[in-house]
Image (cartoon, rainbow, N blue to C red; front, side, top):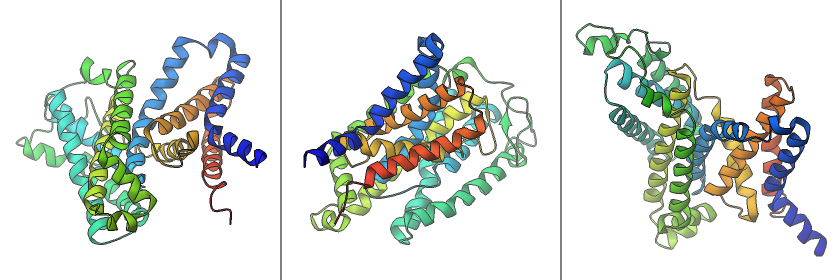
Length: 332
């Protein structure tokens, strides 16, 4: 029994232990080059986008949902943000608001397939990946949206046939969104919002109840469709913010610009589920998972590991997180 308790402790805190060990090893190998304020700022900046995408997945998965289309929707949101700001010359705040509203409207299609048509989450969102990609490329005119590039045909028609963007370039404020310390502050604000939603409100308790047993939650009086819809709208908001940050960091809305964040964000969520033996998706654990992945990427890159090996490292982290999440459950 004592041995089993020790094993459970190691499994519950494996992510935190791995993070501490990684920091110690990289600090020993690279010294002050790794263990410096500048490098830790770089790590926090690189984890920010993954964390926000992962928070969207956290909110979706808390009530036993799943979203495979967050990355493609994030790319679409970047197109919308860039077009509103550059093509139509809208103020920065209004471009952000329109992008968030757009993400929520697009997420209604997710909710229709899942709640009305009763299509399983994974299948519905896998199909929507292609919808987002196709509509996004049509929206952008088949390419990136950046300073100096002409507006798409449909946008030019709305402007009376003029394809010249209303703005010739990005402003300092729009580019600051993707830079430190602003990007880190945005990430921390999103973590706090997600934490309060899931841990400090009755809606969060309802979402966790649905994740534990949806039938029991429904019988206890919880409106499971309404709660799932609420979770979807919060997820859409986080996806929009992440897409805007990716656009700001790249100074362009690039083709497939956010697609690659999907697997990293899922890895962060599953790592976070195991932290402290919570065995449920939570904001703080997700942030720890994203920090672990960012630290490994940063340290391995500094140690000379080639970039194309890093996806294998992420895959290993995800596998380890899944093992930690399920190895101690349902042993009989």
